[in-house]
Length: 235
Image (cartoon, one colour):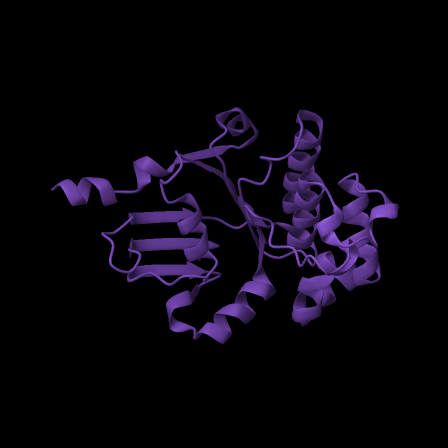
C-alpha cells in the first residue's frame, strides 16, 4: 500500500501529570483527502492537530506525515518540516499583530524556500500569490498594508487562512476556522479552502464542533469514537 499523507499508529498522549487524553489505535489520511473531524469541547481535537503538526510529540506510538516519523526529528527539524509542508489555521489565528496583513500572509515564504518557490511558480511572485488569496477571501486592497491587530476578528481569520494556503503546502490543518464568520463569508471561506486544497492536491483536516458543515466533506470522523482514552481509564 502506498504511503499515506498522515498515518497514526498506537498513538497515546498525556499532558504532564495527567492521565492520557488521546488514545488512537489507527488513523490514516490519503494525499488530497479532506476529513471533517468533530467532537465536543475538551475531546482533544486541538491536541490531535498539534501532534499531527509536530508541535507536540506523542509519548507512545507513531505520527507519520509524508512518510516522516515526527518523533525522529529534533525540535528545529520539526519546525522546518512544518513550515515546508503544513499550513495551519489556528483557533486564535496567531497573527503577528505588529506586521501588516500582507507581511503576515508572506511569513511562510520568508521561512520556507520550498513554499516561496511554489508561490513564485504559481503567481510569478510570493506577493502576487498573497494578493490573489486575499482578494479571493474578500479582503480589500485597502486593508493589505494595515497592521493585523487593527482588523476585525473575522478579517483576521481570513488572513490566517491565506497564510496557511500560500505556497501550497501538502497538508492543511484547520482548527475551528469558521467560528467568527457570518454565513456568507463562511461559505466563501469553505469554498476557497476546499478549492485550493483540490487544486494543489493538499490533504485537509478540518476540525469543528459545527455539524452543519459536515455535509461539505466526503469523510466525517467523530473523535470520541476514535479516541479510546476514556474507555481505557475506566477499564
